[in-house]
Image 1: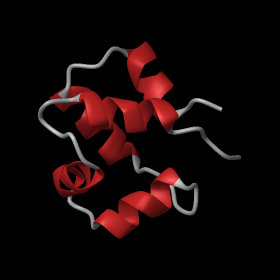
Image 2 (image 1 turned 90 degrees about the horizontal axis):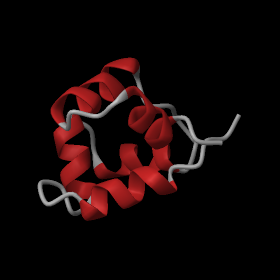
Image 3 (image 1 turned 135 degrees about the vertical axis):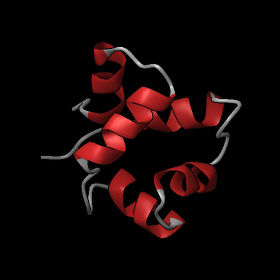
Image 4 (image 1 turned 30 degrees about the vertical axis):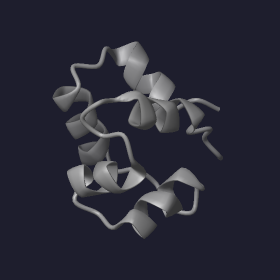
Length: 71
């Protein structure tokens, strides 16, 4: 199953605390290449990474689903 991470990419670019994929990767504690692999569906986001993002940015359940589970 492949997920569409266009909403997540937009969220990262539009968020004043992130702005870049590199900053989001640092926030998650992974390398920029590991993030690119996740965004291209080569690897998956962990539940911990999703929960960390949800909590840090006060996302609703719907917003979280839109960012990480959009098909």
